[in-house]
Picture (cartoon, rainbow, N blue to C red):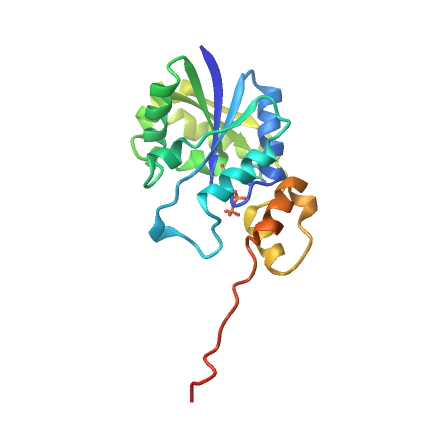
Length: 210
Ligand code: ATP
């Protein structure tokens, strides 16, 4: 069996917070590989500042270059539509029959995990690694895990420090014309600049209106 960690998100764009977290998981747990999976966002949900699927995938590829155990998976793009985790896992199990999957999630997500679509089946197909940001969050998370009954043993809770960074902050910095280079790899920053991503949209006024 191949032990594979799955890290999903919008990655709009990928930043050092994501990469630092992914590295920490690879160092601390015995995963052979870690796959980053950008979510497919249906057209009616497109936010003004959401980069295209191709751009988000390309930025991820650039961001992980040199990381020998990280891969980018386009599985959710290929599935299309709303990205339900159970569908992603079913597809990955077909494509990688010897894969032993662990989903990486934030502690806030663990608290609402039992409201995810077909959550019990998710836990049958994958283990869960829930990252707590602070030690004081642990008792609440452990209580939540215990409420999963026999599936609780599929959930590991670990304290993994994170860099306080978000893609939202980066998009806002770019719109404001600030330098975002300290927040993400240079290759990704260059790509954003060359493609003109996340810049403020121009507003056109109709000169002839009375
Ligand atoms: P946005 O600001 O656009 O909401 P984001 O920075 O939170 O984006 P996402 O693409 O939504 O990033 O997150 C992808 C995954 O990375 C999610 O599982 C999320 O919990 C996690 N994540 C986000 N920011 C960090 C961070 N600074 N450190 C560790 N993990 C993070």
